[in-house]
Length: 394
Image 1 (cartoon, rainbow, N blue to C red):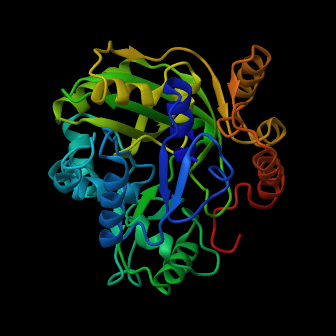
Image 2: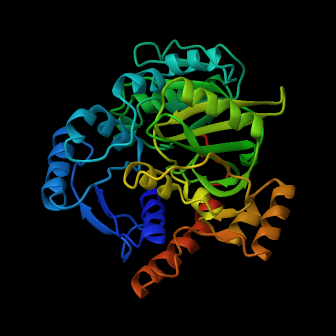
């Protein structure tokens, strides 16, 4: 999903068809004519990753400057860990490993939140060694999720979901037992559940230039998330919104810690105290980040103009309202809970300010069109089956 959005943004702005490397071809990029896809088995493994990128540099880097970007967390980490080597072949617009470790370790990140006066959910950690006697130090319901997303992706067990919600002690214990009965033995993050439906979520994508100055900030207000086991927590429909105070605060944070490149923040508005509670920062643009480009501010233009074309850029806080979605309107209006946002979405659709990033008029050959139609119709089945079912047995 993210790879296709990024490829579409590059194609729209520069007419360039990027090379996309992945472990397997998925429906978002399949049969596309605006990108070149190369399948590399076990690409997320260190030795394979470096060898594959050296081969790319050998084939394409003789007469071209190459820009290397990550579409997922595992690839972002690999790029950052190997940045000194990769910089011999590519332009690598990512932070150094020392800053990554400060940001990604939950204990360190929440200390930074306190330093910069960001609120965050009550959080604790559970390990394989103590899960049988683990007690939650705050009230139910709680969120349970893996701290090591790469290891969790590789494990399997009955009832597996990307994120779980437990409503009581018995449900919590059953979820922990199921997870640790699998191959996953790493830490689990346990958080308080912030009340409110999907529309209480916020997502912010930012770009910080090579001089450490924020040049673009775009805040999105999700209307609806995905609810399938593997998609829980991923946004399905977003309306761009604006909050200068929040943007100013995050801008100061990014510049003060010496951040560069893309940053993606997930947070939720807590009506109990009127604060945004930060969940995490991702060291890349988010899966749904095409909502920024759809609003009229091409996210890939910022990184390319900065690093490849050396063009000066003004600071932009996006205020243009636009609806981004990857689900049918019928699904959106049936399952979204916030009537005010539903009305806003209908207004934007009527005004033509709506984009499904997968359906691009310059990339709709018959095979792709049929595949996308089937993918779209499947959302009706998935929401009917999985909506609001985030427990182990649901």
